[in-house]
Image (cartoon, rainbow, N blue to C red; front, side, top):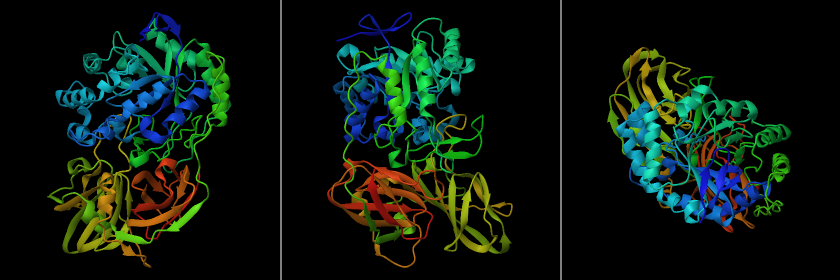
Length: 584
């Protein structure tokens, strides 16, 4: 057993000063079959500690229904086997460019901006979740022979609010649940953020990508003693659909890392290895300095321009960081591990089965609701996926502009069975006027809930209304289609049609014959926008026209020798996509 403590100037392991050389690696963004390799890559880069968030919404998709909560414990056991220490950031809010910042839609839907406050209706589900989650952290703490040395209170709270009572309650809850290792907070090195996000008696750390001396000077004004740590050293950045791929020069990042260490501080490289937003769990941000502008949806890849790329390979940045970190390591660094197996040879194939989107909704969708105004996704119990809103335009009446107010995020609109256009943005109008009578279907997809800033917890779907000229239309028949409804047993019951000349949005199915399974990338020539599954594993969203991502990473453990089944849920295009697999 060991002890880990916060000293006047240093972290203390069994009373001995230690510097933490940590890297962020999120277990939920890496296939479990790759955990051991990725941890080995962190060690080879010169890191002796790993940090991970915990996404509440992934593990409790509905109240009281839990999904593999024990994955965290298995990951921490892998960390211990790798001879590393662990930092756990359980939230309940995590940001992380993750859907809704990790908060479940069934919490934010009814509560809105009351989340992340000392509101009893928010505290109750948080406490229930922590009492379910934390035992596996507690039993793996360093004072019980495990790897866990630090646990975070909330996450970057000073960027959001100033409810000191909520933070103090959360810190006490962690203690009441048995967390005995030191607690910490992390915020940007700005006075208002450190003031709003700090908790008396809890170590404060700072998050930044450069300017370590200035950042730590600001931190010292708020916390005169205690070890200095950059809890998130942003060595790269994430991408949004429709933007250029973010890249940070390796030499510049290495010099910023060197400056942190020259300050005598500990560091957590964010991200050491980013991984992938599998399952459609990518979040979104609001543009602008105040994070209150147009929506910017995050891509499926979370490569982050990290030193270890999405496929687990070392980059130029890896080699530059390894050189810097070697000077601070205890002993020589391990050799770089051999990469996992790659797909032996390219494979391609056609998708020869198809079910129109109406048929998919009819078989896999939720119950239809009838309401005067369109319900939000949260009211229909939809986290990731889409909703079909059907409404009638009375008639007879002459053609008028038809538009949507409060649209989040993107709607493909059909009028009397014919496609009328795509609406994108809060207030959008179809390009051509619509006469009455008519039946209007609006297929709305959430591109990811906001994960950061003042628009956190905003609802999805049609949050205002549908207007014909200035008149609101009423009487909506709405039905949701969740991504987690796509399971093998359910998909097998669909009535797939053979290949045809004319397609539209719907579910395509086909097979690929693989000899020599391994890590691969998947492309979909002819596809427009939607989601892909391989052998029932959801790789995430594709969006061909938006970029910058043009291929999806396929972990080798997902593939099998011989026949592999591929499903493509196409939401916008009318072509029959094909599938190409190439070695990663």
